[in-house]
Image (cartoon, rainbow, N blue to C red):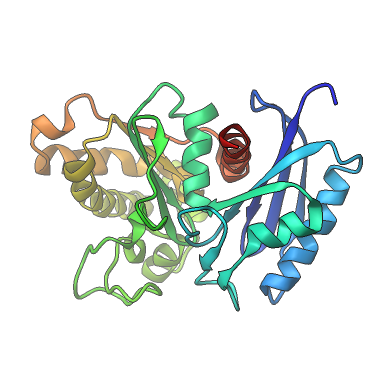
Length: 298
């Protein structure tokens, strides 16, 4: 083999994205397949193994990284739980894939993968300390400290969307009540407005007063949620990704007003709030980076 390659995989509720990557992050081939329904661990494994055979027919890759919609254990071997996928509890996915493919495998939370992707090739590539917030169906997060992904002693750190926002708010799948996710996710936006975020973005773009007012309220809530994270971590930047970030320009000003009002200047000097750069490929890219790191550590 001339140059080694790895596979990055991002498992989502409706689609599974795979890419073959060189060491500098070039995606040499990519593929998206439908997530089987119901998305049981065995069904997902079968689909992934088949997709790997399609993307790497000549067996050129040496490792696999997988992003999961839920926390992995600290060693990156076991999918601990995936709230929105049936039957995912303590699934030894890395071991299963190694048996099926013969390739070293590491797994991680999908938002952590997105953070690693943005740190490697995206909005965080010149930053040592930042947090990523993914505003999607749920709200995920990743913490990059001193250039490294912070996962805590059991692998589950960085669930930034599950911090408490309003103790009397709607119930969250996590068991928390009134988490930030219940105010900032796509599901929360639907509940509050009856509309999709892209509809509200288009309306705001056209100058619709109601949509603009909604985004201002949304930005205010997001800004208040970010205050706690800024005080704890004092990052260089907050990177905002996920589907809702398409309306970044409409909610950012209100978020900044709240941060400036509520955070002492000593905790926010030089703070940047940036849109993510890798879009839907961030998780797949970060999973590939984790595969490279796993190979380097062996």
